[in-house]
Length: 294
Ligand SMILES: NC(=O)c1ccc[n+]([C@@H]2O[C@H](COP(=O)([O-])OP(=O)(O)OC[C@H]3O[C@@H](n4cnc5c(N)ncnc54)[C@H](OP(=O)(O)O)[C@@H]3O)[C@@H](O)[C@H]2O)c1
Image (cartoon, rainbow, N blue to C red; front, top):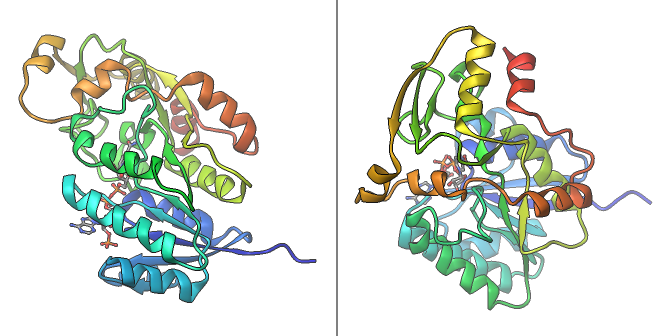
């Protein structure tokens, strides 16, 4: 008997979502439908089925049921109330849908078990939605996290993730590093294509845990600097932001998250889930990628 093909609905598919979409459309275990506010050439050129939606509960539910989707995966990038409102609507859409009983909300960051309040702006959006999920029955969900996307440490020609030199301490395009704290604080990072492969594996798993972690490598920003400098044979221009400066800052940025350990996926759980779900994936380190891609 031929194995059942699951239909996976991906919503708000932007930079990261497109990597996941690319992996799923070539995976014989899945049919993919992309739900978007406006059809985009990127999907049309690749013959990927897209459905336009105003992102309301009724619109999402109708698409899930019309396509018989089993799972909804969100990559929404939106602040505060919009994040919460849209995820609530999509959760309700899943609950009311006849077919869709699994949901991955848009998390894709760090250690949400031990640092649920960080980054600070997540406390306004993701934290309240996680509480709603915990009280919801009738749907299986997981918060999928990967640490940093290692793509942010690579030069632009090696990734489609747009560079964020003001937010990410490593700027491999401007060849600079703005080290937060001592630079020895623990981080973890994963390649976009490994995140995508891992989502593919998780979607086939018979049951999920409430948090799921993947990580290609644990290390520090000083390690990243050393790896880049050794590979390219030149020193990065370095500046520093002290812990005192970070603690005294009013703006709601990622600095506190990255010096507190929140950006590092919890090692024990990540490794045990690697055995449980992701044993087929050979997660790349930054050193592997520099050698393989450059
Ligand atoms: N761990 C990391 O290092 C890392 C790095 C980057 C991102 N992330 C996380 O990954 C997720 C996706 O990030 P991304 O960079 O791929 O996001 P993105 O491309 O900036 O945006 C994703 C999608 O969100 C939808 N969207 C944006 N603004 C909206 C609005 N006002 N109303 C409704 N929909 C809106 C758009 O979908 P449509 O236009 O199709 O409707 C867009 O394509 C986020 O949770 C982000 O925090 C993590």
